[in-house]
Amino acid sequence: MREFEEIRKDFPMLKEFTYLDSASTSLTPIPVVEAMNDYYYNYNSNTGRGNYRIAIKSTAKLEDAREKIAKFINGNHDEIVFTKNTTEAINMVANGLRFEKGDNVIVSSIEHHSNLVPWLNLNDVKTKIAKINNDYTVNPEDVFDLIDESTKLIAISHISNVFGSMQDVEEISKIAKENSVLFLVDAAQSVGYTPINVKKLNPDFMAFPGHKGLLGPVGTGFLYLKKEIADDLMIKNLGGGTVTNIEGDEFRLEDIPYKFESGTHNISGIIGLSKAIDYINNIKIENIRKYCNKLTNELYEKIHSIKKVEVYGNLNNIHHTVSFNVRGLNPYDVSKILDETSNICIRSGFHCSIPSLQSIGINSTIRASIHCYNNFKDLEKLYDGLKLISQLS
Image (tube, rainbow, N blue to C red; front, side):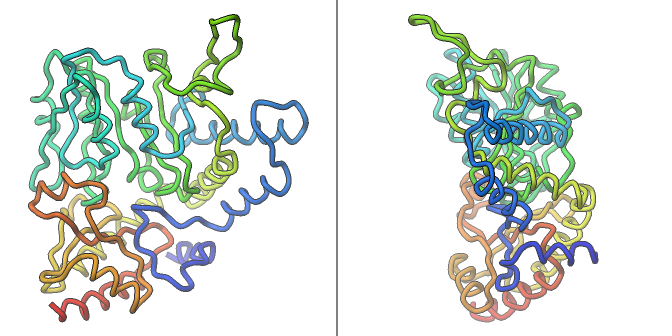
């Protein structure tokens, strides 16, 4: 516990604010910002395009980040494609797969819009939706029941951004493989909080953000793209960095993963993300998982104990996120009061996941989400504020 109290010094915002919105964007530790500043101050140059020393250094730093990310999820260097966020990674797959008329994709009613709308937007492709159960999870058998001869892909979130429930993606992955169906995992809410091993989970695609659990900068993310199927994915963005030669109207593409990365990278962001992974590794992901689970359980129980507060989610399967409402009060008003009276930063609304909320008969919630820089005092402060607010309803 002492170690986690110590790292709070690396997050200056915590001196003024009680930050409980990490499911949206986590705070960025000082070492990550310093690594980005070092790039701008000392070797600001493009990658893969120059043979002078600082350009070579920036290229090496970017490739070092790719190697570090691959190791972090137990993947390979050439299976990591840099993106600006999870949404872009999922859209790369949705727009790059060769769908045929009549194909279908299976998702769930617990998805973030980023893992739903890209599939709904496909022409002549049906989206089948597996309903969530009372325990806020998707039953793998329900996914299996939706598979038919026209099913091309299953796309499921690892952890719900609304209810914090972890889905059995390992079992769903087995079902996909047994039925020769591609499998994509949205890891936006799991990476950085729980160990991820792509060899064990065996997805074909896995989409990640840098700015949530990994404590990295905004505008960073990556797609895990299994080598065996990478050449089956069409490339929709071409240009600088993606080709090795052009002769007349013919061009030759770079190898994987570079052919998927057109234009100039968010170089400082990727360098910052690399440092963020160092930061996570230094604490150890298993320590983060255990500590955040303790905080989450305490958060759930404290909020649940307030009479006029309704909490959503299953205490036996909840991870770093607790959604709730104060009966008789608008979620927006509650979060605004907490901000203006107590400097508590907490999310309200539909959390880019309208179907999740509709599935339990509501249209918005208040959402508290934590990370390793939070402590039990933060939870007590939220509890005290909610207790006072609940008396207004």
